[in-house]
Image 1: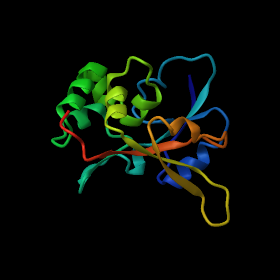
Image 2: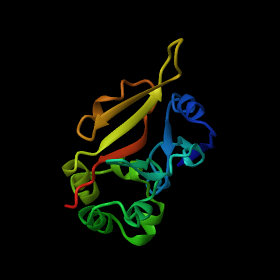
Image 3: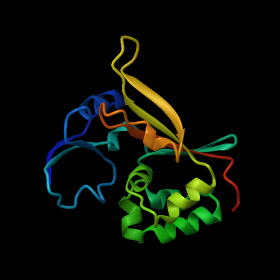
Length: 169
């Protein structure tokens, strides 16, 4: 059950909220809206500008809050990824589910995650950083190495996914 809702306007503000206990990032809300055993606080990421999809040279950059359906409708993604997205979820869920949320909640049956692993997608993970020089720390990680980023200080946010020269699988 969601007990508190925040909608920050900046990434720094979102990260500072995510340091609070029992606080999770909210993208599409397809999983967090389900009843759970303990009440949680959510930080809505919709106002942070993480919903862009752009081709930059040999890269396709996909913002974390791009929905599965928006990605599916992109002219830049390979057919195998389109097929995986169609198998991942029905249309109604694809319209709400975000790319990052789908990755975070993926299990061994996720066709979307499998294709991203096959094409070596890279994630940009941002998290709070408590130093005099910066309030945030951004790291790029492969999908297989992303689980090593959380050191227990706040909840990191996947801000974008980069597909390098998306192959026509």
